[in-house]
Image 1 (tube, rainbow, N blue to C red):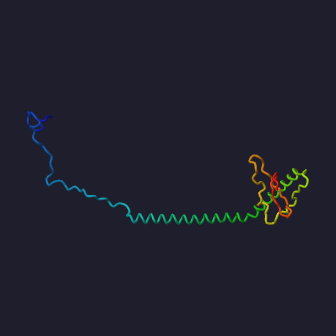
Image 2: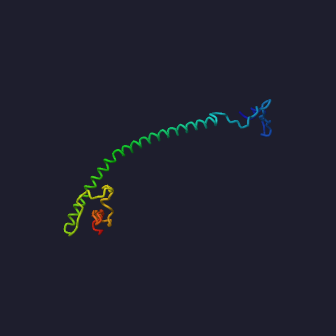
Image 3: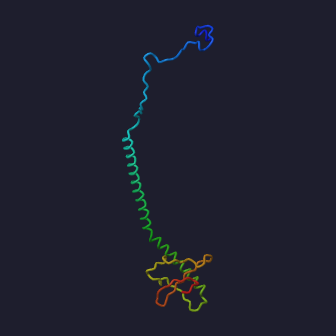
Amino acid sequence: MTEAMIRKKPGMASVKDMPLLQDGPPPGGFAPVRYARRIPTKGPSAIAIFLTTLGAFSYGMYQVGQGNKIRRAIKEEKYAARRAILPLLQAEEDERFVMEWKKSLEEEARIMKNVPGWKILLSLHSLPPSLPPSEASLFPPSSSDYGPPALPVFRRSSGGSIRICLTGFNC
């Protein structure tokens, strides 16, 4: 199909010879365009969100408090059990210390048997009553980082008190 058949004008020489065909508004005009900002009101209001958040936070804090109470009760039970067996543990530690102390005194007697006038304590009852055996350190820090620790020596002074000295040190 040619332009001549569409416009019913045979033999047109130029586009300028064509009649103008222009679109326009419909009769009565177009409907008005709404250009004002209009946001739909979907979802809960701000106060509803605030109250929901406050409720969730309050419930969470309540649960934290309940968990703290339970943890506190468990911890107190554990400490009560420890306090109940503390005398037994202390007795075992005192027994271990006395055995090590006896070994230390026997070792001292073996090492110092040729030294005239050297006396060691043979009675375990010579410690003052205010000093439980486990409060004295059996192996205090050594003067040398590379050798074995110095063993303690218990001596009775002229006044009757007991001194704890390290083997190899004059006291």
